[in-house]
Image (tube, rainbow, N blue to C red; front, top):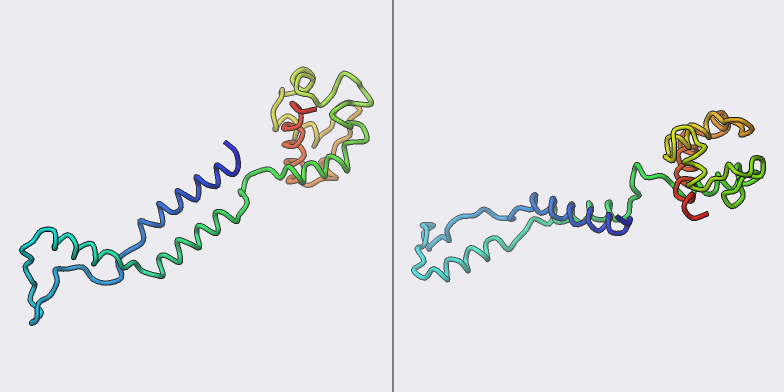
Length: 167
């Protein structure tokens, strides 16, 4: 699912959840007569109209909370999603010397394309295997575990994984 579709769906769910907390601003009950006694309405249509009017006033505080939640959902970034832009920047700064365009200037057949990753990468074509290789190195590839933080390694591994079918 695309990110925008996920955000729209999350906003929809947040609004549905927030609507559970919206309560009428005033107390509910039968309409009061002149002496405070309940009034009997002879017409059922009039009773339904009165009930609808009673429920029409919603708490402004609850509505504000619902709108705040909506703004937070739409404006925020997914907490666990990899930052592919950061991954691309790390790749360009650390990996392109040997892997320009997904190729390999040291060992030509060990490219960063999907079929080569499936064949040569220990653990197969998945993000965890790419993270392990970036962190620990292998053969003539140096280890980047001491140079890059775990979040940066996560981002570059996800970038390589996503790009492997595009190079």
